[in-house]
Image 1: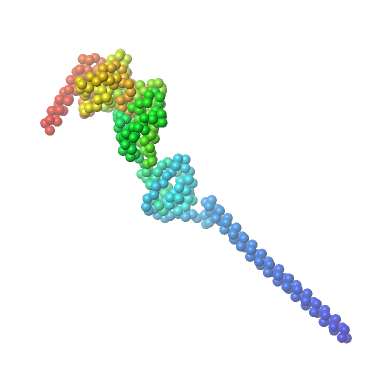
Image 2: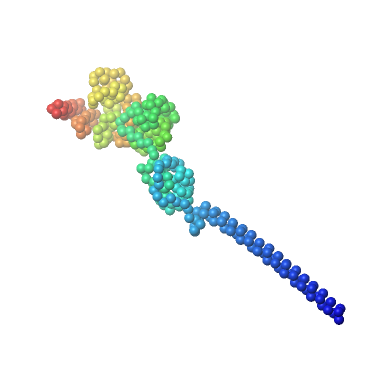
Length: 380
């Protein structure tokens, strides 16, 4: 009997022990499972965060894609430079680094949303404000009034000295320094047919340049513009200097556009018969003086520019001709006139003649106009 009870007690204790061991193993598994799940959750959270930041950097859609942007029109002034060939992303980075926009993405999105207008943004220097809403920054780049640029206007009929002084005034150089720079005509792109003389080759117009422009760039731009005009009218290279010389005479002599081809016709008619041009404008090139006419003393100066003394064209242009005068030199009016004179210095009315007698009658009309206006001035 005792043996029976002892055997039963031993069996019960073994079962309890095995049950306890199983419970410990299950508890251990639950513990490790919880740890693994926790680690997995952390890894997933990190992955989501990295992915979100990556997509945001690419400018993706969704709540995570919201980009920084300022609200207002900005404050203060800052200069930015848009380079030739800059893309929208390049501009965005430039504006961001200058403190204009809150983020490159804000401007890139605005730029991409207005593709037609974006094409109008040109390279150059711009005055912008800091902390601008991307929309306003885009508007500022499209507004020409925000350009930081130098502007120079040279009217028709001026000589190189006027160009040199105007460039000096704009760039802070002296006229003498600009003239020295102009001596390197090869660097300026002056064609060989000009034989190193810039006169007549600096096209009169209005130009805009970046604020850091140097005189050489300005001069070369003007030379290039003259070549462009000559090419427009299909002027052969070997005729360029001659056309510019004729055009410069037309520029100095004509008072109205309608007279330009007429005067060009007179010039060619005289050249065809070896008749001296006898233009006061060529004499004034070597002996500048006030008034319309030259004196006998002026006309006695021995110079190839004195067309009272020498037959043919002067050796170079005497001024910078505009496009209308270049066109007249290329396409002169066809007529038989060999004389012209301005008979009204106020309106620019010009009379033409074939013979000297006819011309002298026109000169009398001019003299009468001068006398009447001279008297009127005296009475006042």
